[in-house]
Length: 265
Image 1 (cartoon, rainbow, N blue to C red):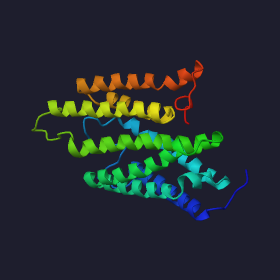
Image 2: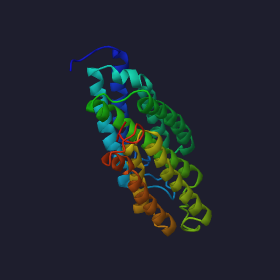
Image 3: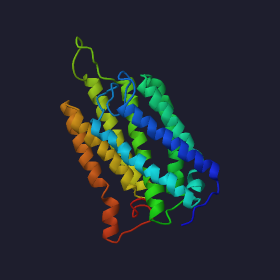
Image 4: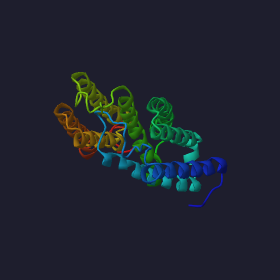
């Protein structure tokens, strides 16, 4: 493959925002003011906050996006499918991270809504209008946005609960979730699990995106001690993991269809 400089302004911009996004997350995680909040070890907790290890999925997403900003120089498909929207997504993500880290959780939630819309636009184009021509397309174009789309759904739910149903950290107040908070948490986990149906049935069998949601549910199981939430997360995580095997099973038994057979489209 030969390097192509077509659409170089957007390609250079993608490199710059990727470096900014990566450095911002690294700074939030390993440096900065000790009073600042980090997505990896957050003070903004709720009863569906997952274990800290869950957030290290970011490392894989960043690695794949690193491959994307290199791959874009060898063909124009990244520009044709993503265009300038990766820049928009990265800027919104950086704003969200800054707001979250400084404790402005409601403004962070609003920003994340716009970021989710921008990622969904890219994801819809990849899943609907453009198919992978080779493994490079699958690995550095389809896969990172599949993971990112499902992960940003997780972040949206986590951020929403941090705003509207946070953990009561008053040592003199009631400990543990109220009945209402427990029910709300189970509803939230159910929403995440039900999203998997969309990934498997309506997004060409997006196993990668579905497994991210299963990963999150297992993270909630590992972190939350309230029995109803703890065991609900485990049950949903197992159910989701089994359900994601549907496209694989259909492919193996020869019942391949246009919507469910490919693992990543």
